[in-house]
Image (cartoon, rainbow, N blue to C red; front, top):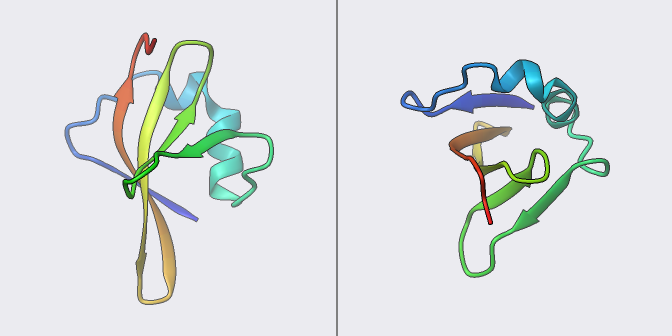
Length: 77
């Protein structure tokens, strides 16, 4: 699966620190990842570690699925 990033999303160090998560996402292997759909929305959240999350959305275009990284949420409660 191709991963697209919001142009204002600061990914400094994020991809390196959580490479395992992104490798599973690219391979469409969601079983080892803590990913949950947010009720009543089209958004999903991915738990990167104890306190950090990603807000994402899935999109289809010409029979291909994309993962859109929308926001990096630091120090989530």
